[in-house]
Length: 83
Image (cartoon, rainbow, N blue to C red; front, side):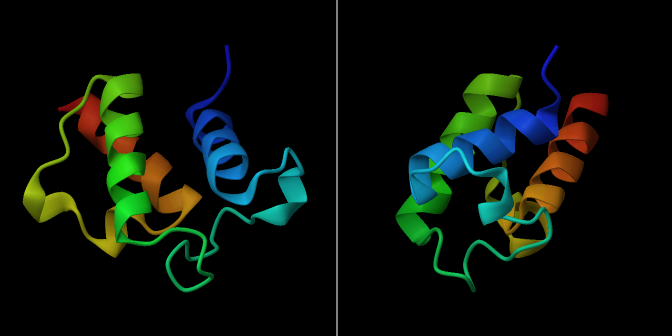
């Protein structure tokens, strides 16, 4: 079974960085500050997370603390799945 971290990182690498090189993105890298995603990219990422993990990202949850790095997204998904 592929981990949530691996699935999310691979999605970002393939859809935004167009690579399979795992070293192109560290888990703590800010997706916005590094210019990897813009506001539209964040919405696409949210849709992917919702569809893949069966969770709903509420408007008030669309903040960098939840969605601006692989590590933040993984932690957010895990919290949401526990609810």
